[in-house]
Image 1: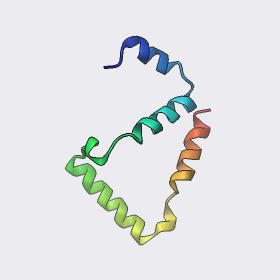
Image 2: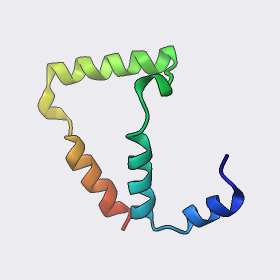
Image 3: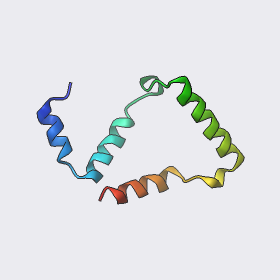
Length: 73
């Protein structure tokens, strides 16, 4: 459990630092740690089909991460 003091300290981090921390924590999780609802699973299937139909329509993870980091600065 996260103490209130730890939570307050984390919230004092810059947005860029919080984003980096979230990314580092996310990388420690396995697919089994992140349960999906049927609706979420269906949405992912729809998006995968859309990507298969036109891979150039989306953005790479590197581009998305870069945009998020710019927002957080």
